[in-house]
Length: 262
Length: 284
Image (tube, rainbow over all chains, first blue to last red; front, side, top):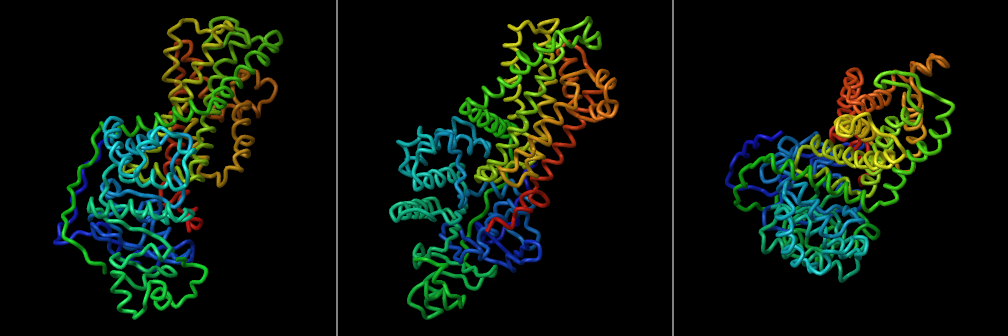
């Protein structure tokens, strides 16, 4: 029953938190992702920016092994998600776009359950919980049923939960959709704090362009293809545009009046 | 490419047996918590067999006598005969209830929490199955406690203990069947179809309510269906174990069906070929 530890990945001079290389994915005959390649470095906040239907959620499902990756490779700290999924996934924290907490359980019960799924016992889970909940400003909500929390608080619990097993890479799929301005700002601050203090690599998928700051790494995904990537300020300089919205329009050539929102 | 900093990966650690047990414990604990919170589910799980016992069996006890057939040593009343069938019925309904909750978990996204665990997926699904079987066993013993006061008890009190492994095996088999079925049910609303086309035929076309030799007298083809029905063997496995005996054929059929149903469920939830990839188009 015990899994033999996977062989460590080849040690190179540089190790990406997430390495996506040449990933292509089909739904039937429809190509959802076309030769997608990019890296997320440890300690960076990387934004995967794209319109609805760009392929963000597909990519997200491939990285988390919900779908099998048939073409190209996805590695988390050098561990191939398809072949060494245990080692890859234990280094990964995930916040899905859909709410995934059990509404009938309390915050504490949800976190203990998550910890168990990572092989962490209840005593250690409670010890870790105290700090992650305090950090997320949720210490006084620990005993509450999730059903009674607002959307913003539920998201904060999900982020706290994703960090509970001390991952080195955090994936968040449109985490601020449907939240008010204050809740959005709180959640972005919560995640940026983790990047700064824990050297966490973050991949943040969004279509909300105002969530990007000039120092963020940005990957622009459009119709399943990566059209540009780099530090946001470099993209602005390269495209000669004053803001990311204009840069996105120039790079994708798309009308974004309905898809991308500040 | 985005610039990459120099960081060596943490070495692979694998998972210890204790971590596997913690994971299984967590899954069982959550299932138990959900069960406790759903009092209506517990009450209905208990009321259903009791209605059969108190009303149906009581009404028929004077009409139907059951002659001496193994494992019974003497003529028995109908409500004694029907009890193992009702124990299996509790497990059948619980297995389907568990699969219903898996469909619900999948629709609400909660299933993803389970499936992105770093432990092997077959282990996660097996743990989920064990959790469901454990809940069904609790329900069966609650039913047996009430049945005891109705005058239904095994020949020896050891029967209560001896039936435990049989209940575990049949609970796992019926849970695995439910899990495999849950992969085929696309929406929660479709689940009523499963109730109509799986639970009731399985229950009625089995030895739960009447011995197969009696069915044979009235309808040979129905007797054949009963003999092909895996639920019949779950009932007989429980019946014999309750009377401190082993029905080896039933044991073999239930164990074999467990392997087949579990393999089907694991394949169905495999990201490479199962339900998740078929649903991929809806992920965007």
